[in-house]
Length: 237
Length: 240
Image (tube, rainbow over all chains, first blue to last red; front, side, top):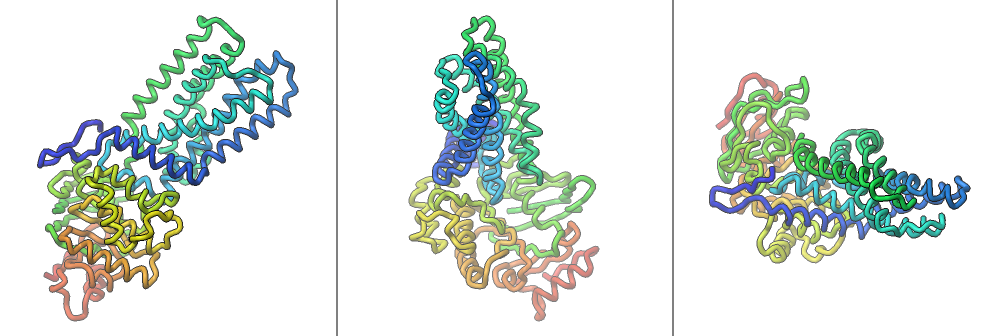
């Protein structure tokens, strides 16, 4: 994996990593922007979570600030699981995953293509949800540090989730298996992201925030490297 | 073109292929016949590098599996009873996607050529989910041959097709195989196999138990040969 295969006539037989990765991103985004199956499901679910918390918790200004990070990350975690499941189910439904795996490409390129598409879909949902949250809870969420934390956290969530979704999608219980597998694995991301988000909203000093940010960066690096090495084995029969 | 020696494949405690040996020469069209559960699909999945063998050696187009899987994949086209196409993309977008993955040169003109070949010219921009089952299967042949593979693996390509769609698929397959490709096709449809294939191998209980060429078939044809082969799986019989 990762090495460029050369045929007997000296020509590379493996399509370049970037070209194959962007082909997967193009395919996923074209299909999704046409059907909007995944985006609409994630968006409706996220809206419901935000609305339910808004009506269920009658909070004053200080309490709102305290629960905001939790509500945002509950929304991201559950909507993300929904999206990750659907994103791999699309590949499995018509056995399209076999079509992908038959191509002479580095399989890690397929994985990173799926990661970029999933990341894009989650960020689109967040771009719509955060202003709505801001209005409903009368809370300014446009704090650069908070937005950076959300992006870092979503990267971690998607990197590990895409790998686990490609495992769970091959089982009969794929709909229930992914959350069971993924939530414990993503716990460090969720905890660190909730903590960093809350600190940013409370205007705490960076000394207090850095450990959580470092944990998020470390998690992302470790899971990206692990997924790069493991994806081929995960999808191999 | 394909050389397989003493191939063994196990799933847990269950052994599916038990020392399978087969050789396919360039340009041959081999019909791989056998009852359900004989291991035909498993064998094709190993040839296409989707599954790894437990024991034995597999060589496709001069490359070893699983070590040289990327080289094998670039020379292989696979068609199964599922079209392996994305329903929310148009026919053209599907072929563009696979063409990019296979690094096909002059992709636009090659796609036009393939749509002409499979008789779908004019339907390029329609979503695949609006295609009939037969049209999807014809587009799947286009997907499998887009990169001009040396070897075609066909796994029950007629499953779920009505009579008209099957006849259209026959025509497309004949066109595609006229170009001198090596083809291995599994099928339960003996009449179709007899019409298309130049050689027949019977796989039963994880081994090739009989093989014959089209010329070597007796007067009573493929059905009699097949029945005789699966009724005595322990010893191989060779018709020609």
